[in-house]
Amino acid sequence: MKKIILLLVLLTLLLTGCGGKSDELYPPTYTIAGEWEYTMSKLDQQDTVYDSGTITFTGSPAEGTYTLVNFYDIEYSGTYVVSNIAFSLEGADGLVVQGSFPEPGHLFGTWESDDAGGLWTAVQK
Image (cartoon, rainbow, N blue to C red; front, side, top):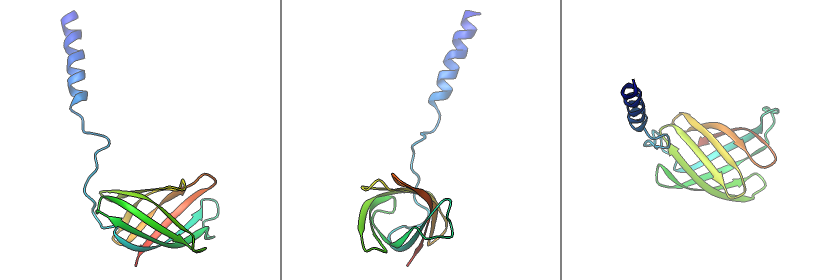
């Protein structure tokens, strides 16, 4: 009986060691490089524009930096990562945007910062 339990424990360890990496990045399906027009709205006020402007992505298809200029002409910067159709932005100002490409040339996701959060969309110029 002890041998069977030991074999089951070893088998369980072996099977859990064969799983894929959870942090594995896949090649981007679409390109994020270039200039985009973005719009942000609060989650509870989706019909009201919270912020909008342009965002420019530079770097490789999978990762790089962005420069965001909002409608007040204030510039922010940060980094991006793209995996398959998913993307993630992290700004030096605390902005976090996560979402996906519903189709080429369009981004859709959610955003949050220290004081607010909501929906985020962008269209490639």
